Length: 193
Image 1 (cartoon, rainbow, N blue to C red):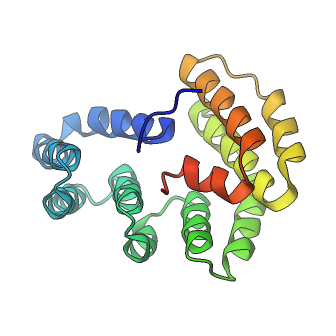
Image 2 (image 1 turned 90 degrees about the horizontal axis):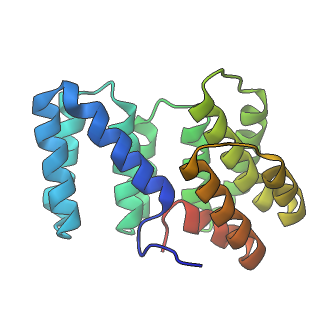
């Protein structure tokens, strides 16, 4: 199976969504585009500065905040990512990310937070197909950690999404869930090295 280095499918999707979503705000786009350039050139502090400017420019943009957490995770700044996750207003995504970071930091609180996130996701309802897809994928990931791969693979095989990127993510997850330990699957999916 071919896997991109350092960048997961979810990260690529988020970068594409952010790049297109910021076009309405040219000033924000300037900051965000500079963040991307600096990030791709491995200029951590400069990239973080531009990302923080994009967040200041458009504080209601949850995608920027989510990207900041991902950027910090990709750069192994887990404690900073844990702080940054508090800026995100998207529930239960916020708690899932917090739980995964705490799991990486070997905190005793991590499984409780992930279990609570799982219960919240089960109650979450939306008509938005993209949100439903994210919800289903998050449920698969959480079931793998909380209940084992059989339950998560069972849910995964029942998913019937048509978009090519959705099919690619489902295929990718089916392989890594079968090959890796549950914690490693979460770390891989959320871009932890």
